[in-house]
Length: 127
Image (cartoon, rainbow, N blue to C red; front, side, top):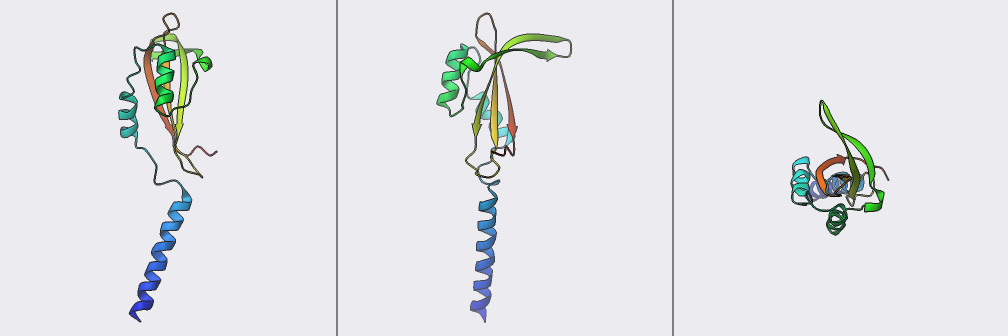
């Protein structure tokens, strides 16, 4: 009788493990704090946009300096400015609902230097 109970528990544990693996939304998540540290450690502020893109690609993000567009960005409630803006993204390895981490590079259109870096996470970016 005790062996049947152990086998039943083992099967239940195996079922729960396989179910969570198939859901694909658990194991490779990055927290907001960890992502903020990752973005801060990129150290792309002050670089030329081209050099920043090369660094972002080296760190596993996908982006191209040719995709940059001129966008009006609000600096605070009463102040807005035009920046050359480029979004770089990195996707987790989950199959069903991957987490997509985006880093937005804001560069001065005249000097082409990165002035501000923004970030956001899309938790369930389906395909």
